[in-house]
Amino acid sequence: MTYVDGFVLAIPKANKAKYLEMAQKAWPLFREFGAIRHVECWGDDVPDGKVTDFKGAVKAKDDEVVVFAWVEYPSRAVRDAANKRMMEDERMSGMEMPFDGARMIFGGFTPIHDESA
Image (tube, rainbow, N blue to C red; front, side):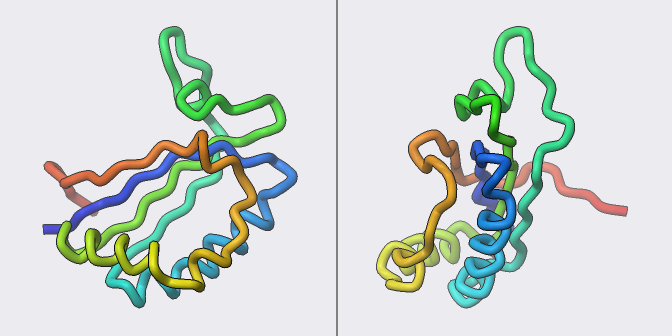
């Protein structure tokens, strides 16, 4: 069954091109490590919540945009092996991260409903 790594990040608006470049460089590595899909979404309608919201989750500042992203793998076993390889691969460690990684939230998810038209 497909497995999904999900991410929410706060990216400085001025770093949009750098972030996109980083994501585009990461995809061939994700694919090599077993990923089957990689999606990056630049927030353009991210409302303030009454109790909590995406901005609050990553402590986004006024000059930052919330990014929602995910990487799909064919299984959790493939994802777990990919994460291990990523931590050991010098190509990943040399990648510039144009955001504050300490405020990134992420996790692994097992799909329980998946349909498409």
